[in-house]
Each structure stands twice: as structure tokens, then as C-alpha cells.
Image 1 (cartoon, rainbow, N blue to C red):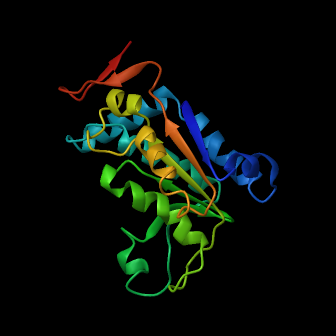
Image 2 (cartoon, rainbow, N blue to C red):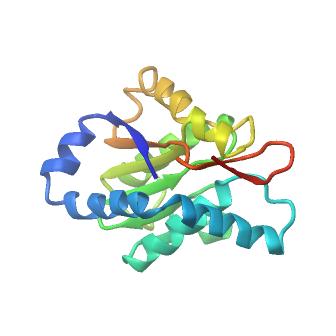
Length: 203
């Protein structure tokens, strides 16, 4: 897949020059690069045969990222904290999608009201606070849809997009103390999901 990038707190310098992050970040980019249009179509159609109500590329993208990152040793659904009620018993809110070494990843295709919380998860994973952590990271990666993918991939109209996420970084700058790379996935090159029929329309 193609993508756009926004860097917060010189995250681009870290992923390009700091050996603590370079290798793992490179894996993330290679996984995103490896997801082809045919992969997305195959995953979408496979899910449609078992679950008729699938309508967007959200699940196919999540599934492909999960499979390929896990194959490279990334831990999925890592809890942010060890102690209850913030631990595994309540991971829907207090978890990261993926973590490895010093990097945590959040894949955020959910409602735009959760934008601030999604941005703050890597911060919570990296800063000292009053809740004991399950993991400790120093760099956050947030993967979201761009406005164009939101439309072409038939995502829910209320999701937070790359463009909306970027708007948060300036007013929240002093609160977002962790370097973050925001990655906005762009549209497939050869097809869209037709809104009314929820069918793949190739071009």
C-alpha cells in the first residue's frame, strides 16, 4: 500500500539514524509496502463469503498487518498496564495493537472521537505514571486511513483520518511527549469498494 507520513518530535530522525529503532521501523514499512491490491481483494472476498455484512477495507487491512507483523515477531494486543482494572481484563481500551522492543503501534480505524486517546496510547506506554506497565516503549507508530482511503475503501464516515489526526498534534504538542510517526494509508491503485453494493469495482 502507498502512504503519507507525518512526524512528531523528530521521529523521522530517530527511525532513520538511531539503531534502537531503525530495524523495527523498517519492518513496519516493508509490511505496509508488501500489501498489494490483490491481497486486499482476496482478503475482502474471503471475509465476505463468511460474513455478509463486511463493507470496508478496515478488517482486511487489519488482518494483513496482524499476520505479517506477527510473523516478524511483533506482539499483538499488548496490554499497556499490568494492574487491574487496566490489565488484560480491560484490554479493549488499555492495549496497543502491536509492540516490539522500543516501538508500539496503534492501528486506528475507529471513531474520530477516539483520536486523542489513540494518540496518547504510545505516550502512556512510554511515560512514567502511577500505573504499573506491561510494556515500555520510546516511539509510537499510528497507522490510519487518509481521507481518500476512507472514501475509496468505504470506511465508516465517522472514522478519524490522517488529515484529522494531524490537526491534533499542534494543540496537544506539550502533552504528546513521545516521538510519533503518523502513517496515513492511501487508496488502492486498481479498485474501490462501491458504497451502495459493497462490491469491489476494478478500474
